[in-house]
Length: 391
Image (cartoon, rainbow, N blue to C red):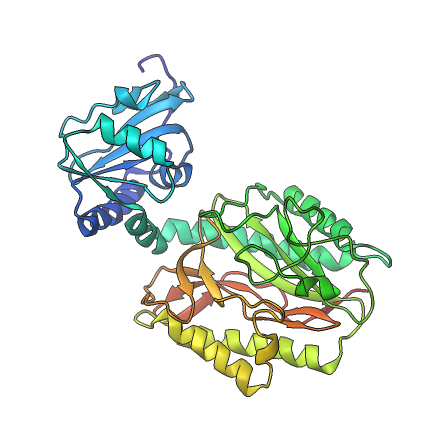
């Protein structure tokens, strides 16, 4: 690849080494002496850019890069390939970890044939655990997204006018987000989520169950993607929940705020206040060493004590979690769920979203992105939390 002129590696040597040290610990947990990465998100994680191909990480030594596209990338340890059969690993690992949760069955079979000398194991769960603890640079990138997302949310009231529909408001929010620098890509792990740049839920549409693993629902505009805004006209007495894309740096924040044309009835306001109170309590609790499930149980108990459990995390259909990790993807580890065994670690980044769906009103509550610190959860999404009344 001597004629190529574009640097392949965009991370500093120290940053890449910090990330590789975490991946190597993941490899040891998987019992592997080699790791072959193929997914865009993990290639981005270890190089700072996306390319089609593979990155091979040995248990010791420098990574190797096998690049299919783009052909312009250059690195001393990079090899141009057209197919995986051209990959040659000089150390011939005895146990090779692949991303078996994300690559296809046929790709797994093909790669197994390329490396007949190696036992193939699944490295995906260990990769997810490694990425769950962010480096200082990753936290900085997430915080930068949070600042830009906050700017957008503070301008949402200016987008409202009488008679506007949920999808019209969503389009204006998406336009504003793109002008602020949002990349538009909403990366999700697995096959249980599909969504565009934002989820705007007005009134009773928030109570419409969806097939997806989201805290909130919505019927959507078409059966091909049945979630979110459905063309509902925003009316007085109904809530408008905005959960918009916060990807401004390749690393995402997740933030939800509630708006309304007029003040909402007392039950909805009480539920919204409970959501904020749950976040305040979680901020105190969310320290390294705390089991993620304890935060879920705290949130559930606070909803019960406030006589709001029937509306907590959904009404007709409830979500089984109250928060989730995020970074390059919107649904990383840890999951804040009742049976989670995950122990919070300093550097985890989580979105906490204790939401409520009130019949005839809609969804209320907030969602913030936090980084776990020794002193608790530090908020990275600092837009106003009270229900904002459209003027």
